[in-house]
Image 1: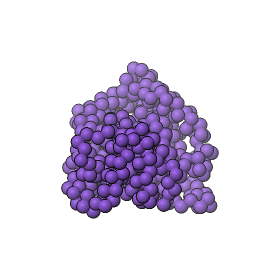
Image 2 (image 1 turned 45 degrees about the horizontal axis):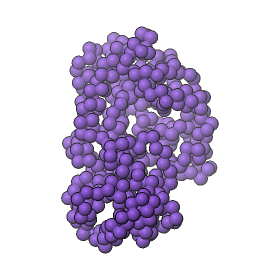
Image 3 (image 1 turned 120 degrees about the vertical axis):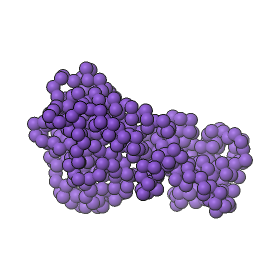
Length: 416
């Protein structure tokens, strides 16, 4: 059991953050640590469940948003097993004072104690609520059930789990076997994953990753590491990484082959990280551009590319466990909006691809509308477009698992 001294302030801070998500605002710019990170992300991963529990227990028709968020976080804390039950109840009441919600103290105390007394009957009452059971929005559940009939439940379960931490070994600096031995010598359990990766048994802060500062490794999900290998790279090629920031896939491309790389992204703040990452890894410089890759006139010199990596904007539904606010901020209509944007980007980038060249379409989405549907429609309308088998022999779609996040890959060739 964890010490209780800082739990009330952590519950206060987590309540503010979760209430922000409930009002429709993202946590993308927040840097969370310790108990606040656990309470915030844990409550959001179980958001459908804790909401359903509070609805089942509360007799109030209208709830104060901060008090309601405090209850969600407190129920997560009770179910997490990290704290003694009496500690959570006591500290939640103290958090009411810190939130300046003094009239709510008796209500919070009573509701949490009732939950502890009636949790078994509560389970039966909320059991039929799919949002409570699977802890995803109902439209999300239905979309996965339709597109992945044999795997949707496991995909949802993984979407609520803690994400894995994979490292990509920089083969220009060290072999994977050598680096794996370094981890073992440091007492860090890991195993190989993919072609260049190692999967840590326990995640750790990046500053404690052996060899990170020296450019031996980068933090990159094992699923994302497929992209560079599926581009079919060869020395001397002109390669474009569209939507490149912060540069993980760009760096992997340069680790694998001696190519002339152009990296484009519209986010100026994130673009600055591309060159920083390349320098840390000791890689050749890339031509870095801050621009919308779909607006060719703003950045393209007119010389076609042999390979294009189109890592397009998407719902990010395959990486939602890393950003647990995301699944509650997304809306059903977002899939179609992203699909339209993806189609526009494909049409634009196709004009920059050389005859005989290959374009790799990538999303971190698990939704059919952003994946096969977009690619199939593009191949049907684009002259000379042919979808190829992926060079690594793997499936186009990856659902979230204990080894990797969810991704989709499609390799399209422009016939000469």
